[in-house]
Image 1 (cartoon, rainbow, N blue to C red):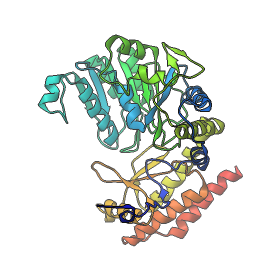
Image 2 (tube, one colour):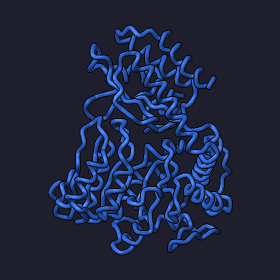
Image 3 (tube, rainbow, N blue to C red):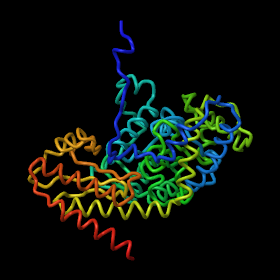
Image 4 (cartoon, rainbow, N blue to C red):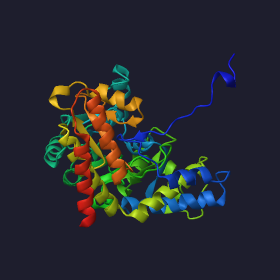
Length: 414
């Protein structure tokens, strides 16, 4: 038998979360979460918060789509909800250029598989109706690649990750949307890493009918709150006609919890599946903060701080292969090639949370989600430089940080 004394209270220390995500939740969001009163899920302020969240989310995503709401959970939940419209036998072209678009590809292969195809290999099915276009690690999916594939296969659905966090690459969303329009494919997009970091409005991409993101990256909310999704009328009409094999993440049924019924808002709120007042409060505050900052300013801040970090690690002899503005993906200098995992583990043991890539080749990922200030970037650079020296490098940390100071001061002067 075990008792409370067997398991001391769990204490999780603060770390410098400098990875691809989750990001560093804003203190105001944490305060909103912890400060919410104990209330049942139908309390009027909870319902009002949910109504206001969906309206703020539409502004945040740049859309007039009524079916824009939050799916309870992480980005996995939002993606599963969006992809639920893909039915067995549907033709799909998927573009994969990293770990997470690869997982998305597996999800779509599972959803599009017939019963016989699932039975053949239920955990890694190979449905005849799905074509996966593999783009090598470290390269972006270009509009030309998408055009060629859609022209050849003429699928019902096409899928792409906007920003691929596994390799730190930005994919061509405009080229993807244009090709979907040209070949009458319904585009689905994983915007987990781009929403709230890049300055874009989803309604500008008419070939995309479904978008899914997450709460814990650009939105900078708690991981287990709400994953944003936004679905066009065409998507909803297609889903109504075909149905889908899910209940909890059924896009139309899930939307009803947010007072979206038959394509219209129910402004007094509706009965819902016990959404937490704490989660609603945190999500509401995160959206307020993002709208107050403005996407244009936030995007420029990421560009500026990523440049500072990239310049610093390049001066240490590292090779940066990414082009995302919230994440730097790098290889160590040739003399230390193959020691990336060792360095990452050393950093994490000291409360410095950087990450390796999760597929070959092994590289290092350093993220700056909600670390958009000189002190945070300087700490990241200093600790990374020290970690390199700990494995035998000869990084002049003082010279590197002096360069950072020049970068920040020149901009302040300008």
